[in-house]
Image (tube, rainbow, N blue to C red; front, side, top):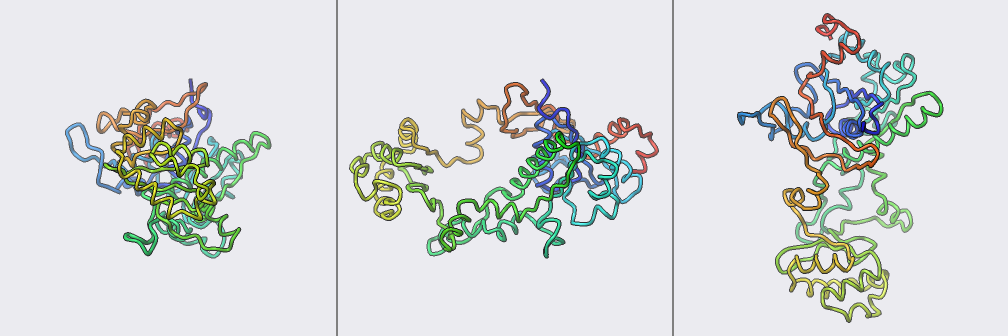
Length: 400
């Protein structure tokens, strides 16, 4: 069966991560995503290595791990947007597309006649998604941005990391480019919302997605805590600011993450780790009480777990319905029986290496299952095919 978006074409003018991640989400859902890249160089992230994919003789190719992680399922065409012939190709693709993704600096595409106001005249059906650091307007609209800086500016690093007064304390970024990735997800949502509205009105739209807006939205409960109290949320390591006990705990042979979410789970925790008297102690009867008396509670929980192996704790708590898990490394995650059962890692055929590994989409559909049969493209791999589909002969192809 074709994927849920197999009837949709996406024109992807984006580079690096946030925009390409949105394009990959849509490609995984079955959309025909045509990625426009600079001749000779391509997407900046192609050079962001090592590591690089190795060919069948063990030599490095030009395909970086970074690029390979965010461009699955797309077709690559290499055209120069500074040339009129390249601009003409983009305009023709826009006429035939449903979604356009771009993350150019505000105003740059207007220089080529490819801004939203230009294309809506010839492609009124187009859902045009602009991804920037700060949005299409405002005092910082022209500024460049990368994930790390936005994690800092958006407050995420102020609530991530150990307390300043403890060893290792201080601000920390998330271990993956979380703002880029989440911006990509919001962009995909915006694109699909634009399509839904188009179904009702017949008209496309211009979606303006800013990384700083996304970072602000992701403050979630921490932001609401501030709005309700006026207090400034602080870093608290792995401790949850509102619900306890939730933290990382050391067992006899390793560490686990424990996420107690309600009073019943807390009571079952106490029985599993051998401190049943704490289950009925009025100092810890409910979550507000546990927060009030947290030092005494954590001392007891840590002492009990320190005498037990990880496997015993995890198996006991899992059986009792208490959320927990070991602190897995990346290889341990990919070797997890549940992850393997869900086939989250696939190997796709690749022209430069034979196969390329991919961590695939987590989305599952019963009626329209996803297929992963198109690897991340090589630079310009599909230029001739796409130009032929547009009815362009070899001369425009050479000039574009």
